[in-house]
Image 1 (cartoon, rainbow, N blue to C red):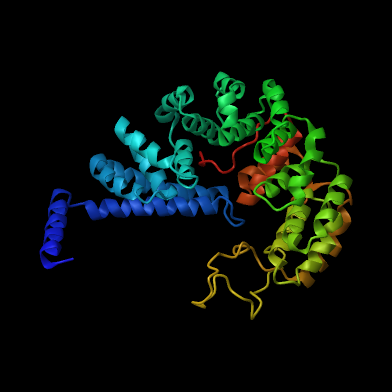
Image 2 (image 1 turned 90 degrees about the horizontal axis):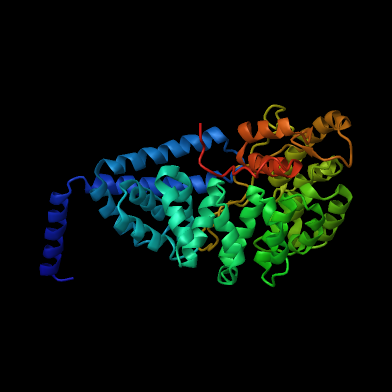
Length: 428
């Protein structure tokens, strides 16, 4: 860039700053809200976050959003720049500001960017779940009546995260061939049937079961089970045995719905593949059979799966590692992820980052004393037989992964309970 052009740019920036002297502050609010949303999207899946912890994080996000609303037009100028990134956090923040402004052009811009990719739409859907009903209900209705099938998908997804029944709108989508040809829309609609326990739409699930699309077929099976058709659980075996996007979703419902002996047989098949060891451990924790506890304890001497094995053991037994002083300092010489080696292209975080290191010997001793209180072949959740009261208590007081598990257990144990969204915004 030549000197004249540089001077021109500097003059333009000075003019803009003069027009909006608080630009830097609003940029900080947008950046902070978007970043905190990313933190929240991670936190809701973490083993060390409680409902209260998530709420505190949400309050920090809300504070940034409220600050942006002190001057909507100035804030929106920053949001427009942020939307060019097409990142979900920035889409979330911009969508909140757009809807709170009641400005149709701003809302349309946020929708346009939010629907532009599978990543950006996550922020858009999250915002639709975050906002109060008086700001989004009329728009959700517009999306349902829109000719754009992506708008219908957004409406279904919004109802899903909000756990609100779209009544006849869902029926009409499931009757239209063009809607069923839209794979994302059809799959999410079938999923919503199970989430809301729409027993009147069981026939729509039967049609979905015949689909050649694996995602559509999976959610038809999944919802059928939630509606009480436990006979469909055997159809999930292929999803359990093969690595794929719905493997963990299949495990989280199948091993809570099928007989223990049948589940053991599938886990045995899964264990034949050494690459599925972590999946086998997770499945064992979901099943909740104390028969596997000694095996899980034996794995706690293996640094690669020690933490995960302890988490699965806790899901079955409810043993509190801290309370019983069963936690080790981090074993020396363990490779860190991401590493400090600049030549290492793997920058992913350790999946078990926030789990505690178990002391295998001490855990074994505690189990020798407590194990006699458990019956092999009976399912347990966090040390107790499955009961409505215990599950509802864990949804309110447990860590996030435990809350997710308890919500699924509760939904499967009684048709009167819809599947609670333990990832939604916390209401106190």
